[in-house]
Image 1 (cartoon, helix red, strand yellow):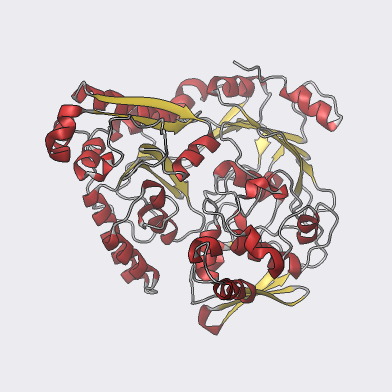
Image 2: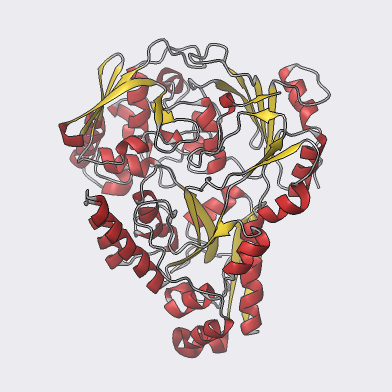
Length: 576
């Protein structure tokens, strides 16, 4: 196992400072999720957005732990006109980027146009594009590589007219139709304002029509902003080595100066190593995977605090996904003699659903600190239906479904698949191992392998539709049910398309909900969607764990906001 405790010395060397323990003005957080990218237009994972939300800034943001109260950041006020089709933001003056460049409306315009222009398929651009230009993908994906120049020109015009500057500090959005969730979308960390001059100087999109199509759908991990940052936030990036991040306070920050001057985010896969660092005081905060570990190994440790509150509720949902048709040549996750469309048979899906022991997960992993979900939607969100039945653990029913699958052929011939999880996530690892044990116990011809993947590899394999079955969660981008229903259940949804899901009746209901303004009517549609998804077993909703945070007890200012990828901002904490 790689030695981890030399990190303080490495950080001290990097910053030219010597210390024996973590200083009062330094914050060290050890976690396990690999950072995918530092580019706001590409980032779509918690680990990446945790860094972005502290280095970049959006127009408005959530007020501390509230999901319903907001405060201005790079804007000072806004207006909604034309029946909800026009949003005008008045920008803050005197703001400086980390590069030294002043922030103006041109930077805001560039940032949003860049999202719409690039809009890589595995990024967050889809929900901005839907509101602003009526598409959910970049020009090449939406129109096709062989579209005519005229078609591409019209697409560019949609982008160009959707985001405009009225003057140096006034930004105007023009939506294709009213979208009540648009303001909430702007609070997402990926809506951060980037330094346009600095980005262009370093080879990013020019911000003009001349090269826009070259950037359509481009993997931004190949660009300069993937590893470099120039934001307006209270912290600036010092270094990202592909794993660990070092940041320091920006001395020309426009707002209140933070008390924490240096930040280290360290990727430590082994939970035991993270806990040892916490005990020694080498980490101020660590990620602990579950309540079982909290109660057995953390609670009562000297100098350690477990933060929790009965009112804390996660704005997220997780499921076990089934791939209706696995893709990828020489795919290592499915046996050569196993049908690629194994999970296209509803009997297979229902069999697996009945082999997930949700009661055991809640009691043994969460120690009772969790709830079952009936659909892929947080219970606090509009349209959640608690009356939808849950597939209870029942090996006998599972066996009956397996025997019906593929007309009985599957039971006779068997199958081999690999269930994957992201390394370090013990909850997902437990689910994978549970399914392996339960499936293989039913029929010796059934073979289930379990494999942990690095986070980027896990995401990449899912995006490429290579995984036959995998557990994954979704944290709300913005506080609206569509942010869960569309990704999980629509054929073009960010998650559903990875499983080749295509159920016209679900798509129709989702589109109907999007066109419905009345909250009560929307709620009823979402309940229909949840029930249909259950009946078809398109995925298996997993129990949700009650949140907690583990820190040293001298760390203050801690709060829980489920819309923050790090649950709180670095600028709000301090040490006693």
